[in-house]
Image (cartoon, rainbow, N blue to C red):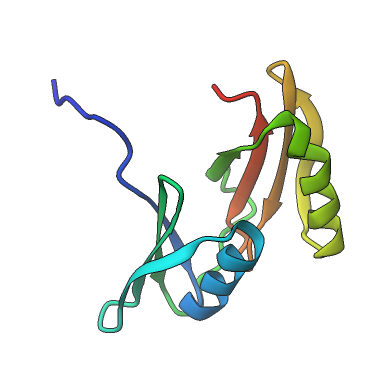
Length: 122
């Protein structure tokens, strides 16, 4: 058995590094910690969370994909987050729905990658 300690980072394929950096900075306050010009790869960090964006020209996630990045959000902040998503014109693809004794909403980034905000934390 391989013993793992935690998730190091989550990778997302995107069509434009710059557009996706701006998306994650504006919406969640991620900051760029490493950017590789030769490999079209960028690492973003917010708190203990690390995302790696991989640029692939022309990429678009498919409707049949159910993969999602899920972020825990405090129950007290959930309605405010919904208001912000609405103000920014984010496309909601699921929810908000009651789920696991809490709530969940799924929206998409500029490349149709699914992003979930939910509580409680599993």
